[in-house]
Length: 85
Image (cartoon, rainbow, N blue to C red; front, side, top):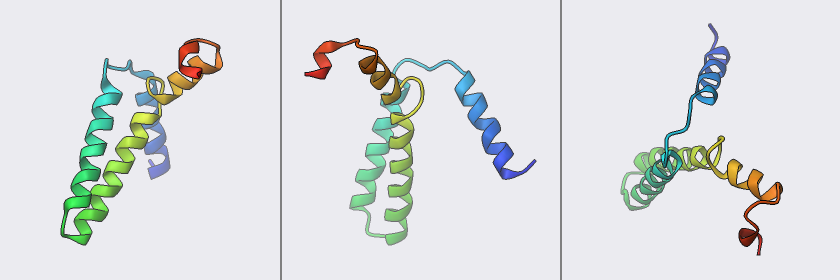
């Protein structure tokens, strides 16, 4: 199995599972904490690694069926009009 096939398989499994309540908020919090740790680190390598991991976690929190994509879909469908002001 190639790397691309393995990644596609993980994506399929992740898309098929149910979201846990608050999952995206926890991932967002972990990403923010990693970015803060990256800013405080003295080691250049640690700053790069923690910054990349923090950015990836924030992107993961924003994507998917329960994250920002769900909010955007709700707004486009005309729901939650108080958010569009």
